[in-house]
Length: 140
Image (cartoon, rainbow, N blue to C red; front, side, top):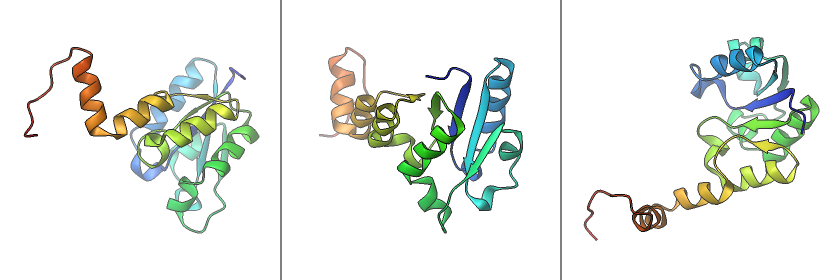
């Protein structure tokens, strides 16, 4: 894993307040950042501040932001050692986390098994209860 690169994939429109502080923190730690974006987000401050930027090749932004293979290819192109998905889109999909890990890149976020568990609210509630944590009573 290349500890000098951290890769950040996420649509700017949903994370205006999120990306730039992360990029600044990476810079303070001596790590480079990369931002992958769709052309509609090309003028965003995060794209400007990222050390390496790469654009999606899809006609619609939502399709590009959901293209796992394209995101992983961009991460490899940037020499990324890690991917932080942000919020929404693929961040809540275990298959994305699994694909990133299988590609030899660190996934900054919950383990794929945790993402899968939390995506099933009934299983998640049962897990939390069995772990000894209180839960709000529900009408079963």
